[in-house]
Image (cartoon, rainbow, N blue to C red; front, top):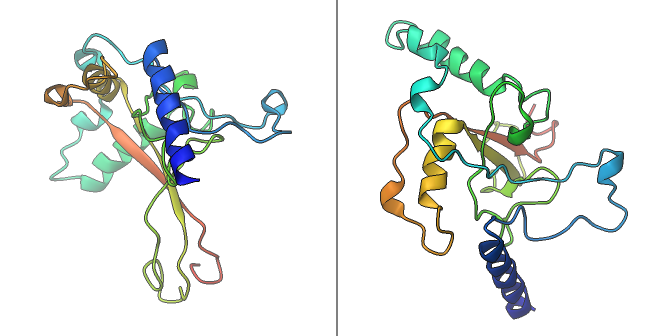
Length: 191
């Protein structure tokens, strides 16, 4: 069983490389899933910028001295991340304010991207890790997004999907990345 699963992932990777795009996730929605009726289907935001956009990026946090006003500085970054993303449920490619991008190749394996929101499995939260009242271990999930400067760097690294160039993994100033984390923790254990 394990061997045929790995074969499936390799086939998907080969198809995506040939087509010049990265896989969204490693499996399709189940029968009866109706994206036309609003059931979400994750699409990897991978139309990475090919020119460095960092000089033209809005950076509202730069007007705030983080030494003097760290909370205001962080709030400006958080507001920047939320602008336009809340309305489209964090589908970065659909953001009308500014486009956001995903990192490729997080789809394979047991913790790989799921088909609805692109969430990946994260490490488990052990008892008492999230709250003193937590007595069980809970699963956690996440999805990360990068602004145009980050997307530019990712696109440079993965310009040739068969030969990523790690030397180009330099994020220009103004890069913002954020990660939404979700837990399956029960409210009675983690208020």
